[in-house]
Length: 293
Image (cartoon, rainbow, N blue to C red):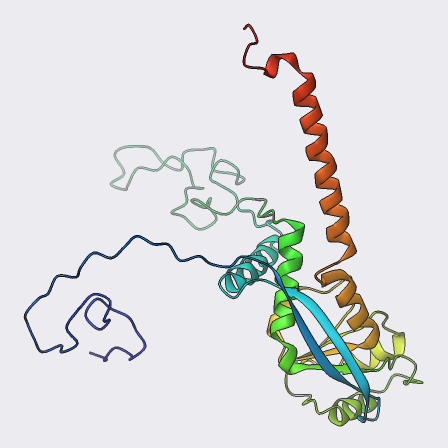
């Protein structure tokens, strides 16, 4: 029997359940009841400010860029990113798998042989699920797998994943006009100058993708070329290197920053809705306690 790993937690290996640190001792000690004081966990969304060097098309440092993204608290960051990822993967299911039951498959209307005096098992149809060509028992049917997630929660999951990957993030200048014609060899040469391994997974985030850049990179199987419209959580977590252009950095700061414009508009919209609901309650006489039913 394989021994348990040192990092595994059990009732016998953890000091939480035993007051005596000597495992060979068989004397039991009762733990004193502790006070029921709750630990206060910070749930405030904070900002991750990171300064990254900006590299040129030749691989030389030409400046620096600031990435200021909001991030979930450390206690809930893993859960937020996990929920965003599972929601994206679940919503990507098409739900079009379909099979035929014995009532839907064609044929089988006639009884194949008499019920008795044949010595065989009784059978009422050739389309029974026990026969080849018959129906399927409990087979899949078209289903809607979509799961709802709040917009703010989804944006927080993406910004948290980006903020946690700052160590493997590279910022480059816009190189859309550097490729005069589609050439995969030139794109791989640029990756080598930037310190990227073409054999490892990498994700490029650009505001605009020219045709020459798209055609030059499409033969590299480990590369993902994304725009703000196609940015998703799975490709961020699946890549070992994130390459951002200066325009992409500005977009991320504007969209996923702590003081983004969309969050302000949504907060103002929610405040207006709350104010409208308050006026409706005040103007409705049936909502008072003295109303006669």
